[in-house]
Length: 151
Image (cartoon, rainbow, N blue to C red; front, side):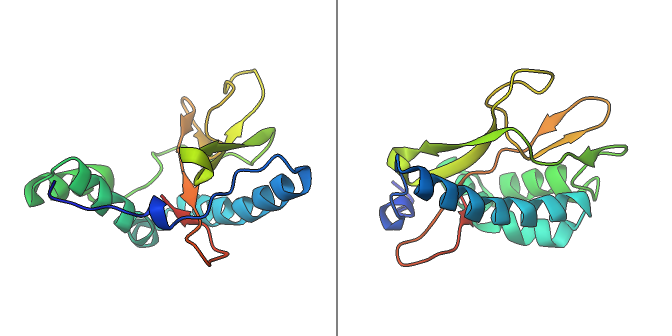
């Protein structure tokens, strides 16, 4: 195997059924989501690139991307249109969400928890315009850290 990715081996297991712990994790996660929301809403392309760099690097390793593949993906996703959000889109506020655990409690996210135009289990990080778009964001906490990091 050409890569050895051990991020989740060094991540905290956050899974809990304690309502107070769930509330605490959710509040901490909302801080991370708000930071990303600001980057999207204000179209801060360079901050976005920095934010997703490690995630994209890991994905490129896992998918056996060549350097050409990686550059093409970056160009199509960010550089070509120079925008994170498309024209006439705006970020929506966070509402009606719940905490969801993945990977044996080492990855967490917030999902929309209401039936309606958005649909249940969609990312709370979403925009509206001609249609709605969801931006899935998964997070983990490294061992001995209080900071959520984008997975």
